[in-house]
Structures are given as C-alpha cells and as structure tokens.
Amino acid sequence: MSGTHRIAMCPGTYDPVTYGHLDIIERASRLFDEVFVAVTDGSFKKTPMFSTDERVTFVRDATAELGLANVRVGGFNCLVTDQARSLGAVAVVKGLRATSDFDYEFQMAQINKHLAREIETVYLPATPKYSFISSSGIREVAAWGGDVDAFVPPRVAQALRERSPRPPGSGHSD
Image (tube, rainbow, N blue to C red; front, side, top):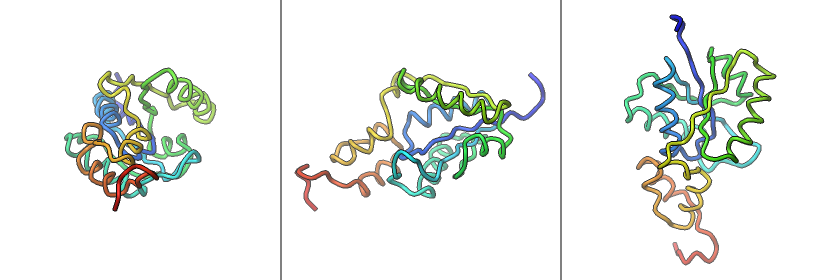
C-alpha cells in the first residue's frame, strides 16, 4: 500500500446514533487512516428528532469513549460526493443490514460514482448482533416507552426518553 493518507467518510443522519453505527465506524477506523463521520443536517425523507449539533455531539462522545483517535465528526449540508471531495476522502463507507439496505445503497453508489468517479463506495456488512437495529426502530421503541439501553449509548438513551413523544392511547400519562 502506498504512503498516502487514506480518508473515508461515513455519511448518515445518525438520528440517533446506534451501536450498529458505532460498529461500522469502528471497523472503518481500522481500514482507513482517518474516518470522518458526516452527520447530515437533514433529509428529504424525514425531519430528524435531534438537531444536527445534538447528533454530532452524540457521535463525537461515543467515538471518543471507544478511543477512536482517527475518527472526526461533523455536520454537512451538501451532496455526499461534494463533502467527500472537500475532505479528500477516497471512499464512502456504508453499513448493510439486509438486502433492502443493499438495494437502496447500490442505487446511491451508482449515482455517487457518476458524480465522483474517484471516490469508491465500501460496504461493511452489519455484525450479526446489530443487524436488526435501525434508528427509526429505536425511535419507535422509545416513543412507546420501551427500553433502548441495549441499542444506543447511555447519553442517547436518556435523550430519547426525554424527547420521545408518547403515541395516543399508549397508556402513558404526563
């Protein structure tokens, strides 16, 4: 391998960051010299529960607790390929839980390759114990008052308990 400094970017909403996300970030940190976790400001699909600053802080705290010295975290609000180029990234790293993830991510990888031929997409399959965890699923469990401690870092679990709305008829009262 050449002596170049190889930077990867792990983009996502991280709303909220889960142990599955952290597993992918940690594994990417072993493959690349530097990993930039790019927390998107928003999404066309949904409005995030947590602000960009909150999500960046959650990811930054969790990666620091894991001792990942070669991981940086920040927000972004542009095309993934534009952010990757601005960082000097050679790869975009994505985690895959199931074939449904692959279908979507493969389409995005083809679009990204058209926009930035020099940036590769690297897929890391989910570790089996995290393969069922999704941010949307965790938000739903939290909204119904379920225990999310096994799925997210403690600070995130607390924030979910404080922030989660209770669905109508859930039996919870304020």
